[in-house]
Every structure is written in C-alpha cells, then in structure tokens.
Amino acid sequence: MTKVQIRFRLERPLDEQTMPRIASAHSIYGIMRIQVEPASQQLVVDYDASRLRTEDVGAALKRGGIPVELAQ
Image 1 (cartoon, rainbow, N blue to C red):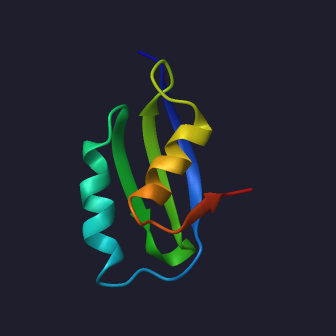
Image 2: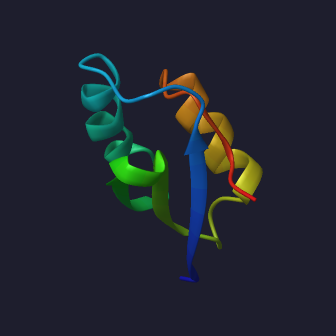
C-alpha cells in the first residue's frame, strides 16, 4: 500500500447536499480518508496509490456528486 495525500478545491461552497456525498465517498475503493477544510474550500483526500491514480480519485468524487477540481 502506498498512502498518498492530495488536495481538491471545491468548485462551489459546501451545502447540506454535499456533506452526505462526502461522507459516502469514504466507501470508494482505495480512498482511506477525506478531510474537509471549510475555510479554504478544499478537501484533503488520503488514498492508496497502488489502487488508484490521482485522476481516478477526482473522477470518483465527481461521480459521487462532489464538485471538485485538483488544487494548484
């Protein structure tokens, strides 16, 4: 297992609909932890790089209804 941490910027502010989606994203295969940083409108995601690529993590979050883009 290769644990990697990556930051995603939320494309819009957190709301009541997004929070349950973030909670359910914990069940995505290979994602170990998601931390919300409301002040900076970012998500910090820990994932297993031996199972997922950065692009896979972003795509999985978007499929789950979480509006993110890779933070610069």
